Image 1 (cartoon, rainbow, N blue to C red):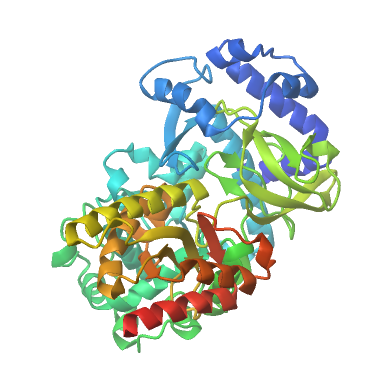
Image 2 (image 1 turned 90 degrees about the horizontal axis):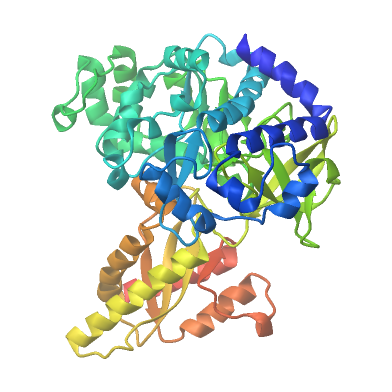
Length: 544
């Protein structure tokens, strides 16, 4: 079995992190040899890790954007000698969309993490064998679907051919579902196919809120789903879907008799063989992961390693999260002294952020993730994900301060135009901060609230402005996707005369020293006191 061979190779590499990592650097240097960036940086295939670090500065997408744009336009030899198999969109801090190059070598690097993870899954959770597996990975927002290649929406393209075949056999949801015109179509079809899969043994999603939103959607889609599952053909509203509909009289009967409460008893009846549920369970995802685990009590739960569109850092292995040592070449910047270390130089307890050097041509590429070193497997470091640096990531939306500022500027410009048109004056609304507010109850959704200073526009005008705010925030890829998938509530605007005082209260509620509080473009209100303050003020405005 390919996964077993990869698992054994991974375990050997865990005992020789320096050897494995030096080999990965040589492979990347061969992949970029003779390219424009190799000539510019003076790279040589046999250079040491120390020489490579001295020669190559830390990089970001902004530094690579022009070269990637040239590659996408057809230029060869910019970042890698090898042509790109796909460009995967994601959001960035200063760019609404980043297009990450995926070469065959980079895909092989991802496979070097996926295979040992799969090996360990079957070893630790034997109940997943013999059933079908739902893996939800890449979801494109509706407005990008027509502009991206079909394989961007098909995550089987990340796998080797044997694994693609295995995935096709075990997947309950056919790949065409991810390529429908809209997210609503994809979600409805996904629900129908999942409901029909009485042999489902594994549900793997990135954000637990995606799975929770999918389950909640069963309530509103139940009648249409019953029709589809009874007849085996799409109902009138979905008759445009291109593939064959699933048929399951059993699932239709369960849905028809259901009382509408999404709980463990109902999901257990729908999927009696479910053995494992996997999702992010750290940082701001922890509370949602606990809720997801409560809804699937018959299944075991596993957290995720650290994956980004740009590459993989850790995978779950045993009960730890070791470095994906056979994938990319890694460095880690110590957040106490700012110095980069190689993987074999780390010590337990260090707080670091990762730099990736990959076969896609990203060299010393900085990820904005804060990690803690939590022991070692062999001599390979294991990590705990702590949080994003600067960004807010309640459900995977990766909202950055830069994107927040752009949305607030657009809101201010729109409010000024609104004020001029109404004769109220251009200073009727002065945006102060974008607040990321977590809900008081699990049934509610997190969302963003623009706190603005002004005489108090009232609910009607603020609601009109909220549409402009939401449209502006949708320029950020992952926010747009989270809204499409129903993970975030629509953005709201709160205009009050004492906005600065309210902002001060929010900081004090979070334990900040009063004299150190200054307005920031983006503020996470994930503690009970600050979130309650915002909800109370919104409630007062609506009732007045």
